[in-house]
Length: 390
Image (cartoon, rainbow, N blue to C red; front, side, top):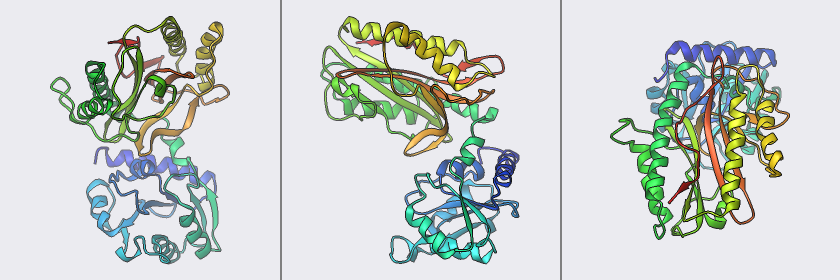
């Protein structure tokens, strides 16, 4: 286990308090991040039905999944083995049967099938078929939408969680420096992406730690492709007088530290240079007001006030809560750094502030992963946000 049993139990107590307040007797979680947060489970098994069941009348959560993945639950979680249950292999991808037939039977066996049951309706891995199986076989249950119930509990990190994100920061800086050193006219994007991934996973001689796969694949796009926010590297070559946006994350124990920077081959025109300076000014202004008691709205206003001064528009949000994550995302789906999000900042709230400026034919990105401290904030990375010139 990467956290103490006491920390897992503290998290579970907070979730049960939320369940009780929302009149939920049972909670079924399928978001891999929430499964990990409450049990420690860590495996690439989310492509088949799996989950964690929390009941107010049980001391521990119950992990359920495919039989061949149950040993992974025994290895990675603190759960007693009796709380690790599995469905038979013949239910895997074998319509008309389904693994949630097993889950439904388990609910009935434990007298939960007529209770108030929370499910993550908008979680990536809670499918329409999963929900249909439960509602059709448990007609006496009252189902409640528990989307992001656990995510909001995760908003404030423990010191250990922040420490893992700081290890991720070392890895992502190594990856970004590799990008700076590798991008040159005539070189393939795919070659640079491979070098970056090696740094993110293997680390280097200086930091002496290794990383893990990220919830989001590396984003790398050049020229007109940089005008889009989420394109990935291809066999295209880097060209003179072209900018490249790069968005990466270093990951340790599933805790992410994202970072974005922009590289330019050649001499950028004044429009690109000026936009970078203005964006940086906006980011600096936003950072300067971050402290406990401020809101996500306050941070957003500080950034957009600078853009408005120069007549620059940006429609997308400035950032989001981040930390623990699995594919396809490293965001926590809670707080967003945008106007009218009144989430109050507290110590150990961590978020990714990403100022992406995606124009018609070009784009640039700079970002910081930020931890709110007792008196202000800290940037987890220490790498210049200036346009990196090649």
